[in-house]
Amino acid sequence: MNFYIVSLIKVAVMAAVFMTTLAYLQWIERKVIGHIQLRMGPYRVGPHGLLQPLADVVKLITKEGVLPSHVNKLFYLLAPFLAVALALISIAVIPFGPQVTIGNVTTWMQLTDLNMGVLFVLAVSSVGVYAVALGGWASNNKYSLLGGLRSSAQMISYELPLALALAAPLLLANTLSFRTIVDGQAGYWLGFIPRWNVFPEIVGFAVFVIAAFAETNRVPFDLPEAENELVAGFHTEYSSMSFAAFFMAEYANMVTVTAVATLLFLGGWHAPFPEPYSSFIPIIIFAGGGLVALYHGLHPARRKDKFTLPAAALVFLGIAGIFGLSFFVPVMQTILMALFWFCGKVGFLLFVFIWVRGTLPRFRYDQLMRFAWIVLFPLAMVNLLVTGLIVALTSK
Amino acid sequence: MTALIFFIFAGIAVFCGISLVAQTHPIASALSLIGVMGSLAILYLQLGGEFIAAAQVIVYAGAIMVLFIFVIMLLNAGAEGTSLQVSRFAKYVGMVLLAAFLGLISFIIQASLPKTEGVVFGAFTGGTAADVGRKLFTVYLLPFEVTSVLILIALVGAIVLARREV
Image (cartoon, rainbow over all chains, first blue to last red; front, side, top):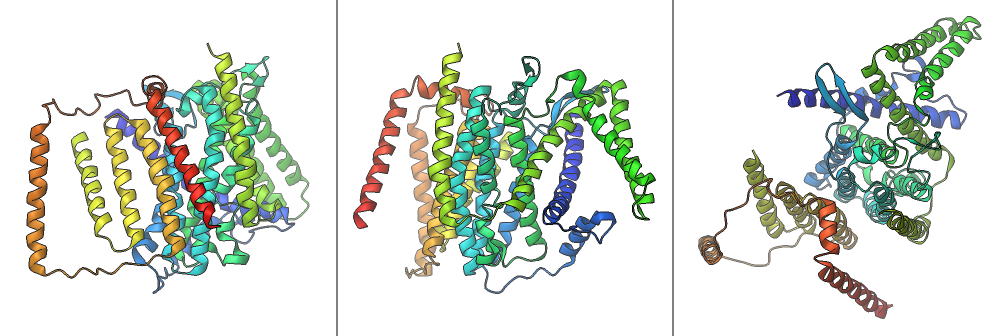
């Protein structure tokens, strides 16, 4: 029975954290894009717009869900459900850290481990295209239909380089289970270079990230919802919670794809520095941030800085204190360190996604297709063949 | 538990199979086919063929059926009317006769097959990706290569046929 209770607790924690992350990811995106464009971003609801996601959720829930009269009702309602269900399901096989023992309970920081975890994520993401295609088609609107068609063509095209780029580190790891892949990346070359797959597989990593942009329908490959051509693309006719479902699915897919990139290429939860040094990094970062905030709180430039900055400093120093405390509790340190490095890497990749959105213009449709088939696909193929050759020559 | 899951997904598979034929709209039929493939993948998983299950979803549901749906949407094919006018009497009698016919067929098949001890869920464990790969490149190397050449021929043939029109 113990297994069920532990699993239930893990699912509950996971669901709460994941949902909050999705809501705040949107806040972070608006903030980062705002600062890239020399704006402040959301600022009105709560300090620095921190309660904006909450306000958005309340707004989306209380809005009227319009069911247009000309849609195919069953598929129109099915599409957002499919989108969000398929986007949320793949987080179940993503491991966040090593095995931990709390009291007498030993468990992995992961909901479940499949022998074919990588294939599971691929399968779920390959089915995810139906949500967009169906939503576009069932809306019975030419803009939506064009968006749905573009999206299915794009996702089929970019799935090939994505899968091929993903296969190269699998060859190195010789397994399909995320846990074993991450374990294979532990340790350091020459004592300080981490044994991450990104160093031998730099081409594969680049191809994977580029294809991931297309798979998640993000700028510069967001042709399915190009607003200057297609109004809003496949979700033009959606409102209220069904619109929110598509929105949430996009962010959930982003988190999943960056988590997979982290696990396969960036060494998962393993630190980039050898053990005694890496444990001090989070303390230095959080304590440094806290001290900077405290300094500016004591020398306020604006009147309200006297209260807000010391409060922020307190939060940062508190987190640094928790990391410091964890030196005396080995279990806590294992959990916190794994989470810190995993979330740090995923967060960095997510930041790159947002950064690219603030930097690059949208591709034209023919450029998008040509890029997939003439550049990415051969590159991924050659990378896979070379990796296969090296693995075959070096393995006994 | 396993038997319950088997019956649920077997039921879904059969239901989707009937729906595939009964639906008048091509998109609905295509989606029913995806339902069949998805539930078949679950059944493979129960029988221990986890790689086959994943491949079923990735290749059939995720790639081939997307192309089907893509083409249906591109042609914007609408619902087909039922042109066949059948009397209600013929319909009901036909159902009974069909059931009898299927029962007869299944009885004959079952009687002519050799007796086995039936399927035990979880007994077969050689369905991982590594096992399938090893089998493909050792025992079944010739069929594997022949199939791939066959697919290559079909691909080249499709390109040749398509080019003639341009």
